[in-house]
Length: 183
Length: 362
Image (cartoon, rainbow over all chains, first blue to last red; front, side, top):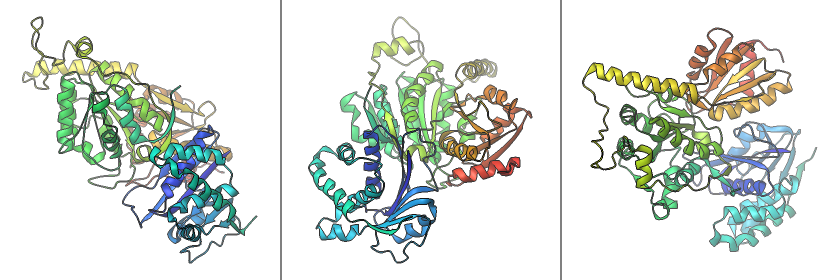
């Protein structure tokens, strides 16, 4: 099993930390992982993306242009990464702020209204965990218990009291995914 | 087995330095390697092992602080990225000329000039051919994973002290910024004064004792003939390093008709290109130089006898390709594929370049 994922959105949406939690969860189940961010002048409001690879085998290139899954969280990223999903692959997006919805017919397309759900729950910070939950619903590459372990590893101990809230957000995402196009 | 962690290459450099008993780090921030000093400052090793971490006023100051520490037999290092390493070249040639050990980490970015902050491998010439003035070499290690960022800190210091010569870890923005699994090395204590006396007592500035004469650390010798004798000694050292310290990795070479030659992150990308090309029936392998100086000349020459062609893949206009051509000496065709200015090649375009250069039909 090798899952090659791009997570792309605005800086400040939790794109990089979501990728890190996913990668740490992969380690928790003895898999090989890599996490390669776009780096540079991106800060809050600019674009940010990260390539995460989880595999049973040694990972070759950490830098990719074809992905099994694209998780897309803003229009700029949709314009750039929709075309980079492998045929038969998966695109997951939040429709919030998307004006040009994905049109490909040769990939699975799902959406989750994570921004709305997070706002309604009164805690916008859980946005990325809702997205992560929706992703795991369609691509169960890591187990929920390993997400919990991954959170323990990637969060400083003073934030460990927030882990249950994050797990609830993952479960919320799992329950609110909508199918747009299924092969 | 120690704990497996998920860390950035740059963070691992800092952690490995503390764990291998490094005495001092002197640096100046620059993207894409600022996490090295950031991690050191967060870890506060001066409270734990007594290691000094100092942000100098410039790269020139940093390398000269390294020069001073090295002269005292201490395990000292710095890190920077391309423009900063250019500033350090004067210090490096003095350190090489004074035959002192130290470790320099260069997380390369695109040039020339201030260039870009994105990954590149366009400082191969500077790293492997000397970089500053005079006939000298650094020992150059090229990590291709976060694990090797850990392993090469200790290896770099070992080689530097074994040969009394500066060693360099030549990484790039990809290896510095990416996170991977890493098994950190166990802690080694810093050397005591007695241990330094034992290891480097015949040259280090450890305080004049009654039992011995003065130790003088200098790269100056005004008598041309004596300076030539010194240069001959340096050259003998480099021949010994070339004989004993070559390191490389071969991947899918056994049945390979064509060969990629690539180091660092390019070597990782080429491994994906191998997967793609072999799906199309193209038998291609990879020879990855791990030491760039000393260069795996003999291993490449041997492969030239049994391959139809070689493609070097570098994030540069073609620098290592010159050393590959010297190694191959006309026995097989050697072509180059590269991207410049901070652009990272894709696995697909490398396969296309292989096919285009050697007229391979899919």
